[in-house]
Every structure is written in structure tokens, then in C-alpha cells.
Length: 262
Image 1 (cartoon, one colour):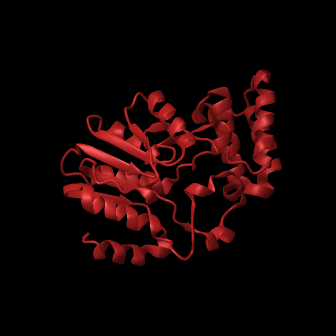
Image 2 (cartoon, helix red, strand yellow):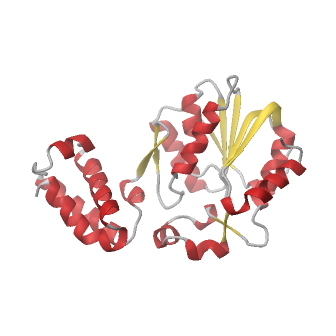
Image 3 (cartoon, one colour):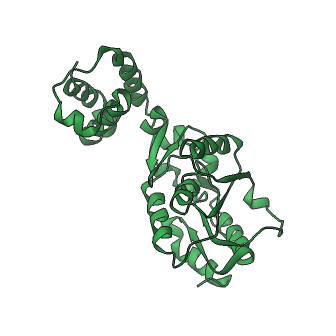
């Protein structure tokens, strides 16, 4: 089969789930990963033959897509802010919004940060990408899941980047014996349980709920705790960066202002 044949087969099978345009993108992504040819090569040699040795793997991947499994879990890694991050169902798939947060942090520094703390690190995508961009910074990442930490440590090693990962339940963190940080950043759980009905099935069925959801009666529980930590442990003129639930923007701002942030 040619590249064109595989893409046509995938679009025919997947369009009901993903639509034609996304189905085509998914198949090109699978072909890139499986054959190790670039997207430009596939486009240039659209009618070129795909080696038959890849057929069983491509068929296997296609069947997993038909079950609704996210392509990132099928591939096992994603590109994120200039680094490759390993992913599995033990961690959330990094989103473009989180990548935007990393770029915002990069642009927002008037001086080189000596220390960075990433809270609720998950896949480690924020910590690892910041550690690459600020190679002499000391970067620490807190995460409650041992499985997530193990995967994040492999990602850091794969990228030859040094990040100190610590198993930590931030909601029960009480110690005050910690260093000051120039930057504290977090993308904590913030989706309310009542919002599950609005989410795609492939998110609900495959991604870890521990990293996604909070109770409706206390949606800012992580943000209050992180803000309290930051109040005590940010350096002079230190910065706190948060990814938030857009529906709770004003409440989050009010809470932070009440704790002395500007």
C-alpha cells in the first residue's frame, strides 16, 4: 500500500469518530512515527510504497484509534516546547494551552531564575521544558503519582535534562522547611465533576481522573494551597504561574489578591 492508500483507509474508518480533516492528520502522524519518514517526505512521495513490514503495526494502531484511544498514548510520546515527553495513561497528555504557559514563563523573565518549582507536575512537561530553556536553573517538580514520576524521570533522562522529581501530595503539604523559588508554576486538577458531560469520551476513558477533576463544592482547593506555599516560599519579586479553569477566572484572581498577590 502507498502512503495515500493508508491515509485513505484511515480516513474512511475514522471519519465517523474524528471527522475527515482530523482523521487525515491522525494517519499522517501514525505514518510519521511508524516509518520514521517526515511529514514533508510523506507529502512529497504521496504515491510511494510503504514497506510491508509496517503493515501489521499500522493496522494495530488504526484499530486502537477506532477504540477511541488517544493517538499520543498509542505513539507513547509527544513534542512539547522543544522537548519530547513520554506519555501513558498514568499522565495527562500535554495540551497546547500548557505549552503556551511555558512560553509565557520564558518571555516573562527579566533575569535568569535560579530556582523553579513545578507543582502537580504529571508528565513533567513543564519542568523539563523549563529546565531545557534555563539550563543552569535548579528545577524541582512535585507529583503525587509514583507512576507519573517514573515516566517523567525517563523523559528528563531521554532529553539529557536534570530535574529533581519529588513524590508529594500538595494538599497535605505542611512543612515550611523549603528553599525559596524564583518561579512557582502549576497546572493542577481544575475540571469540576459537573463538567464531565462536556468532555470527549477518549479523555474520560483513558486519561487519569486524579489529574483532572475536583469537587464542585471546592474547585479552587489546589489553587489556595499552592498560593499559600507561594506566599511563604517565593523569592523577592518571585512569580507564580498557574493554568486555570476559564470558568473560575475571576474567583481565582480574587483569591490570589486576597493572599497578597498582584
